[in-house]
Image 1 (tube, rainbow, N blue to C red):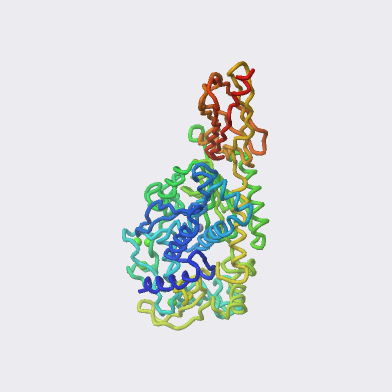
Image 2: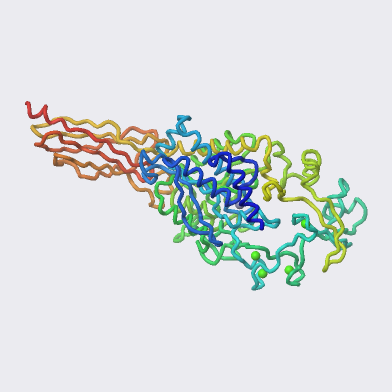
Length: 580
Ligand SMILES: [Ca+2]
Ligand SMILES: [Ca+2]
Ligand SMILES: [Ca+2]
Ligand SMILES: [Ca+2]
Ligand SMILES: [Zn+2]
């Protein structure tokens, strides 16, 4: 039923101009599919869709490629990958992806920078890395970590046997509180809707507790725990092959690396797209831009700690500083993941997507944890004190972010009260839930755009290898020296990261000559130029050729895996020689 209503609202929303998108709610998978189809049909020369696999529930996993195909295939250009919605409820990343798509396709041909980027680079954008999970988070009152595949959260041998229930039928999963003198909570002296810890509340009345709190629902399996095993539970951001560890060292990492169709599909896409130079994996919490390593890294032979190459760290900091500058109102913090969190597991997390992309493939890879709603940055929603959130809700949202406690006769607990903070708000116009951290509002779209600006900045940093001047000098009769200048016009080196050199994934730059009406007598057909740093002088490559025919030509082609493919054709002017 819900699916039918959704489909109807999609066609209405899309009818004005099918290739336009409004950022007024969080888009479902089907809405994203419709938008991507419209983009491809409106902008066929610069946009195409790749189906890179199927989700657990059989949805196509879609990557939109944006590049001007008239100037070459995407694989022959430096590329950037952006994805959203790996974690089900962290839905703003998908909207950022859609904003970048919209910006690129609508401003191509108008904005000179965007035009040049789409002509010379390729963008691969995947708004819904985990469409099943994100649709669940958007359309159902409960939530889940990442994918919907049934998973035994509590280790009792049964899968998803105790999800929460919306007992009072208000469309939300909130909390239940039960009066209990031994409970750990007391009514807050600041506001009777809130509770504080019993210890904290000791001096306000007595040392006794008042409340015991549960999430809303039934203990379906009668194990004394409420809602301990809902939909899904495994985390595909612990399912990648970099330093993968099983439980309990890693939290719900899946049975083995890339065991899930979603993680395997993106990994295969990365392996097939050796032109990638950068990647952002979007999440939503904390307002931080963070980069690998996410864990302690040791040499497997010596046990010595292996540190990140200093040059890469420097570049991460430079790119991070730009995020802070462009996404300024969000007060972004930038740091390395490992060591940032407390001593749990020595601050390490294992099997993380961006670690695999950076450490195995040598591509700059970021987790961007999009922060909290602008304008209330410091207090809302989960980082400030509850009392500040509640006041903010009262003053700005007519109290809508908090459901007042109401009595309810629970079949297992007896009389309880149901209420508390909302994590997401239902929008009856779209029949979708919007996470409270990304409510549409006055700054919302600018915020999405500020991320798009950062993407454009990062893409401009890529290497970009070109055949520059080609000089043909006559030697003895019929002999010519052809000298080509091979340039990296970009900012990053052709190996992109020092880690790519360590991992031996950085392919060197190769120049090739193909002759028509002439023979090569000096120099090899393919010349390995090694790597070319960014901001550098050109490298020279030289061949000697011999010809007796009229109008001979040479095509010089340079191939840099991450700096692009480029060629120039020159004529070898034979007339001058023959007239001597
Ligand atoms: Ca279970
Ligand atoms: Ca589960
Ligand atoms: Ca409810
Ligand atoms: Ca239970
Ligand atoms: Zn996340």
